Length: 100
Image 1 (cartoon, rainbow, N blue to C red):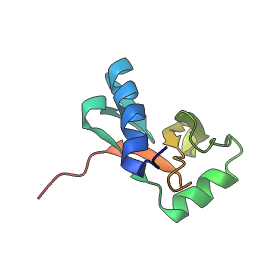
Image 2: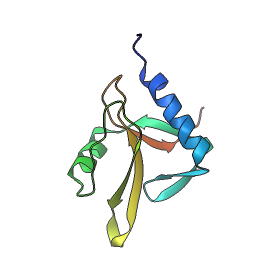
Image 3: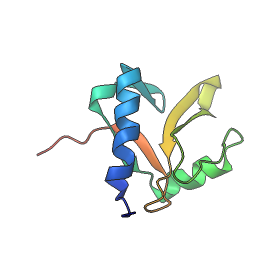
Image 4: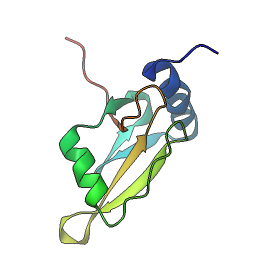
């Protein structure tokens, strides 16, 4: 079996999220599913997630995990993260970068 790239591995996960949801959470915002993409989670955010009391481990090659994290003023931040086998890194759903 040929190894998949990160993009090939994340594409069906993103398609499934878009198929089942009109909007997706990113921290304290809701973003249109059609305008969402997976982006590699910066190291600082990984450290923040790993130390959060609400963190649940994300299985390498498994389905995306929705994490609700405590934020300031009793608010919650929600992120959807995945860990593709291709690189073992955490990737988060975020607003697509605009081209240009």
